[in-house]
Structure formats: structure tokens, C-alpha cells
Image (cartoon, rainbow, N blue to C red; front, side, top):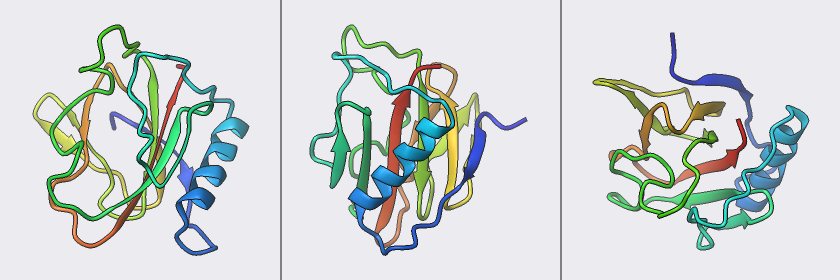
Length: 142
């Protein structure tokens, strides 16, 4: 059994604009009934190409090897007082987020929209990304 739930796939039709992808995916998560996490203690990525504080979501375009998130972690593990018991909805155009349970590593397919329970697994941005990678994250109530 996989440590994540596949919620569907999403392939952007109008190019690779982060604002377009972020808005499209947050509309889809809302239609699926997911509510954004409200937590003032957990770090939000205001440096992302697109982000929404109200929706607790971001879309990034990255290419730098060794950038933030390449070590195994759980969101909120370095934010004192943060609610770590939440869901993460993740999506990537290539080399999707890796998910680890014990010593087994799983990786969804590109363009899959997935849900993980943050407190149950560890995850990371793959350290071997080549070229540009578009990725989306939204923290939601579970």
C-alpha cells in the first residue's frame, strides 16, 4: 500500500506559469473538499514564484541542486509551536517529491496530485533534479 493518495493528475495547458498552476490546483483541492491549514507558526514560502497565505499554498520553479527541502523532513519540524498534524497536497512536473516510510522510498509519477499525512511520513525534494522543476504544495486540514 502506498503512503500517499493519488487525487488525480494535472498537466498545465497554458504554459508553465506558476500563478496559473497554483490557482488551478487550489481550485481543484477546494472542489475535492480540502480546507487550507490555518497555522501562523509554520513557515510559508513567500519567496515562491506564486504563493497564497490564505490558501497556504505555493508553486515554485526550481533548478538549483541542493536547494531547500532536499533533506528528509516533515513540514513544521523546525517551527516551534507549528501544527505538524496536517495533510500536504503535492504536485510536480518532473522528479516529484520523494516520500519515505521507514527505509522505503516512494515517488509519485510526474503530474500526479497526491496527498500525504505530514506526521506519518518524511519527504524531500529529490536531490538529483535536472533542469527546471515546477512544484506545488498546499497544507490542508485532515
